[in-house]
Length: 372
Image (cartoon, rainbow, N blue to C red; front, top):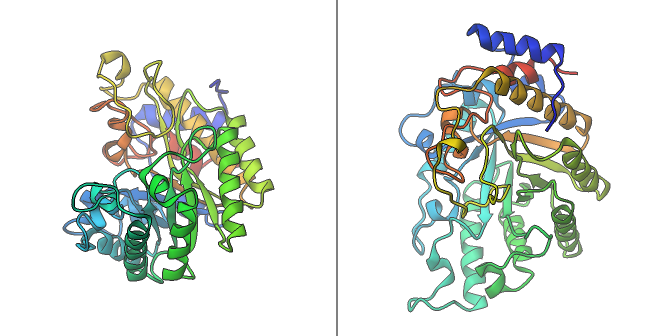
């Protein structure tokens, strides 16, 4: 993506080059509090033992918290009827300490769901009735436990193919094409006041956005309101174009659908030519130095490009602030980011606003000190 050097970007870059980056007078959430929530994903290791301090980055910078993994099925109910709420309870406690809202992630997904959910004792696929009962129990138990404490739930995650059709998963094969309707209905029953979201990656692609709009309409026809569509923003310095992102936001807004930017990060690393953009966690490629060029740190040129792109994105989010409810970063520091291990394990990526030592980068300066 071509970048244009602006005075603010030069200023932010000079701060980084001088090695004396300073935090903005206010946290990111405070800067944007009149427009939308700004959140971060909390890794599981921060939800075991003592909670992060009240002056830690999650508390001082953000006003919405999402568990990166701790609320997914494999952690909440790893075996039939065996619920483990320890880390999820810690997330609630952290949010109360930070005066932040909690976003629950996620209730129905084809990944990170134990195999037993779809099988009987002999390992055969369960009946539709059995799977519906298991889904209802799981959602009612989880959502019900945090009724009134979770602001909104990613009810269904990544149910669409790139062409907008429904993905072939055990949920769909056993329950049928209306599997997602049941998940939303159960969530609404468990907490009628919680917001309910559909969440997916590559939502800058027109066909996929059209599929999401169709899904939301079908839920509306079934009497279920989707409060927002989550656009997972796992972007790169090389894709997608800002115009593609904006067109998708326009499509959602014109369809009467509100928007959440749910998993924002911007990889600075190159990908193999046959890699699939987005966030398909099944992808894996062999390590090679050509795909890991910034082990010793991010050079000035890439610092500038990252800062410029983050500024452009936030300018876009502000442009559509009447339709954007939340912007959530998928991690707090570069050391936390899943991008270090996807789709090649062990790389050194630099996709977030804070470096591996928790220091603000040029990108942080760009979106907190230079707001149009």
